[in-house]
Amino acid sequence: MSLWRASVIVTTAQVNAAEAACALDALAISTFEHGPDWRVEALFEDEPSRDGLAAGLAAAGIDDVSSLEVGPVEARDWLAEAHEHAAPRRQSRFWIAEERGEPAPPGTLPIVVDAVHAFGTGRHGTTAGCLLALEDIARRRRIPRMLDLGCGSGILAIAGARLWHGHVVAVDIDPLSVAATARNARASGVRLTCFAADGAAEYRLKAQRPFPLIVANILARPLVLLAPGIMQRLARGGTLVLSGLLVKQENQVLHAYREQGLVFRARRRIGDWSTLVLQRP
Ligand SMILES: C[S@@+](CC[C@H](N)C(=O)[O-])C[C@H]1O[C@@H](n2cnc3c(N)ncnc32)[C@H](O)[C@@H]1O
Image 1 (spheres, helix red, strand yellow):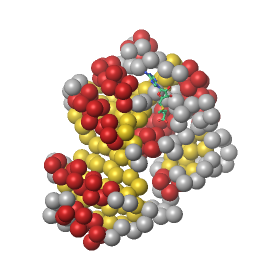
Image 2 (cartoon, helix red, strand yellow):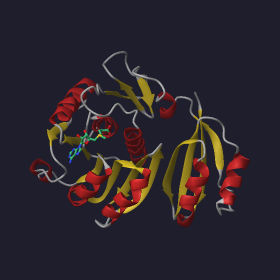
Image 3 (cartoon, helix red, strand yellow):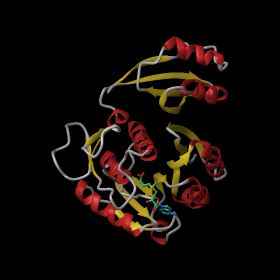
């Protein structure tokens, strides 16, 4: 199955209107920083009408649609693959299998996750949003040290280890998830430091130097409560990826992290779920 992508550059004041205008029939809506402006991107199962989108944007008060682009996405994309079950599948740059089997196709980064005892096969909108955010970051930066807070199956930690070959710490409040992460890391052939921790304030985490990248896919309420602790573990200039929140909870979570001095950089919406990317100045 192939997918279609539409993207348009808009001002800060136009972001919400542009997202709403593109949302009709879209599988996912993402918004990225684009210089002083924002790029709103929508993925569709079928080719959207450029004229229809332009008319929708104009009706939403966005008259200048000269930046509007519509085009096909590579056939083997993560959303297309998400419709398959259990079989090893490609999800963006990653090759996700539930057990060690056939070698991963050339050019992909293999991850083995048996998520029977922990959350995280990669199919959920929150995990998928985080995997895509990691890929976006990898296009711009090399990350020598990363923290996966609320690691579940360990899928994001393993993805980080695959992308950067750096030091990755994976923690979860649930000891079964920590065990699953350790098992999956072994099966994936990567080294992680995993231990149980409630939030970012655990003493073994405090003993670590601040991280240039933290990924936390937990729920909105705990994310709000954990904001001060997470902020302390994030290095200056570091990037924070937050997920596990619903689109309608974005403002509540953003507010908590802006209060800590973080700056909002990007968001990606998949269905009702949102993934936020923030940066510590
Ligand atoms: C939605 S799952 C995400 C799993 C995986 N990171 C992924 O992206 O698929 C959330 C995980 O956060 C863990 N968790 C919840 N509250 C936590 C806390 N206060 N500290 C650490 N982990 C927590 C849960 O046990 C669960 O494994």
